[in-house]
Image (cartoon, rainbow, N blue to C red; front, side):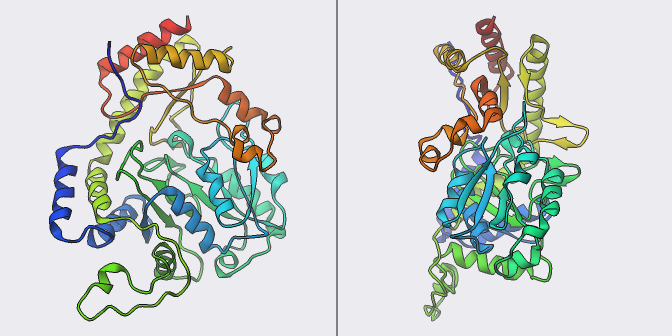
Length: 398
C-alpha cells in the first residue's frame, strides 16, 4: 500500500546548503539574507517594498495596525477561511464581521459585503482560497460605492480615502488576476511561507503593499519594521556593530521578524518557483481530466482572466452530506491517502460561535463545506501516486 502525504515540503540539497551557509556565517536572525529575500519577493510580484515576517498572521495584524484599526472599528472577512483571517481582527481590538460566499463558490458575496459596510468599517480581508485570487474588481467597486460612509482615522486611512483591502494571499503567491499578480491586487497583501505552502521557509510570511498616495514606501516599511521588532529604533544587526549599542523603544511593538535562516530557504525556493508552479499546473490538469467527466465539481484554477498558484485541489462530491464526506476521507486514509477539508467555515468554530455567529446565517459557506474534499497536491507527488489517488477516489464514490 502506498503512503501519500497531504502536503510535504519540497526541500532539496540547495535549500539545505543555503541554510548551512547562513549557520556558518555567524548571523542567523534578521540580517542580509532577509533583506535579499524581501527585495527578491518585491521584484517577483512588482511592488516597491516587502517586509519578511514570522507568519502571514503577523503580516495581517501588522497591516491592520499600520492602518490604525482598533477598538470601535469593524473589519469584514470571509466565512470560508482559516481562523487567521479573522483572529487578527480581534488581536487589534476591532470587531469581526463575517461575509458569506456566493452560492457555489469560495468568493465573498459582494451583495452581502455591501450590506455589512457602515461608518465603523475600516478594512475588508478577502481570502485567495486554494491560490485562486478573489474578485477584486467587484470588491473595490463595492467599496467605492460606499465611500461616502467612510470615516478615516490616521494618515494611512486618509491616504486611501475608503475602506482598505488587506488581501489574505497566504495561498496565492504567483497567481494572476486580470493581469495583476498577487501582491498588487489589494492595498496591502499578506503571504504565508508555512511548511505546507507552495513556497516554504518552514514558518514565515511577508507583507507587501501598493504605494499609498503621498506617503513614501520607505516610510511605510520603516513603520512596519519597527512594529515587527518591539518598536526598537535599531535592528539587531545594527545594534551589534562596535559602539552601536544605544537604542530607543519608540512604541511597544510586537516581535515577529523573519530570520536569515528562513530567508535562505526562501531565496532558493523562489529561484525554483516557476518550475514548482508548472508542476502544480500539470497535476491539476491530470486531476481535472480524471474527475470532470465523472460529475465531480472541482474549483477552476485557470480561465480567460486568471491563473491560480495551484495551492489546493478541492473537489465537491454531489449528493454527499458531511457524514459521507468524512467517511470518504477515512476510507482514503485506510489506503494510505491523506486528504483534508478546506475549510470548516468560521461560524462552525467555537471561537466564533462564542462571538455570536451562527452558521445558519451563512448557508452558502456551509453548503460548499459539507461535501468538499481536498486531495494531495504537491510537487513531490509522482504521476503514479496521483493515478493511485484518482483510482481510489473514483472507486470509493461509485
